[in-house]
Length: 111
Image (cartoon, rainbow, N blue to C red; front, side, top):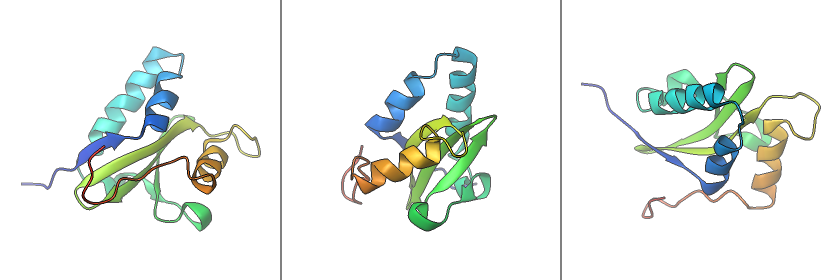
């Protein structure tokens, strides 16, 4: 039997997901997020530099940025990949982390 992880979305990630106007895309992203409960480290690619420790799951042009922490998957950002654009999801995630607007729960607290 495979180990199953619990998935949590930060408030920022939840609002980013709800902001996606195309319901087909947001539903596909939600299904892929649900799929992270099995082997999340094999599904997304490891990120580097400022986002080291996080992983990115590709869903068409969108990315789901998450962190695996013990038995939990914490989704921190969801958005479109637009390289060299300030609205690029990686740029937004880095900015949120620098400004400490993404809160990762400690091991004793649940989201």
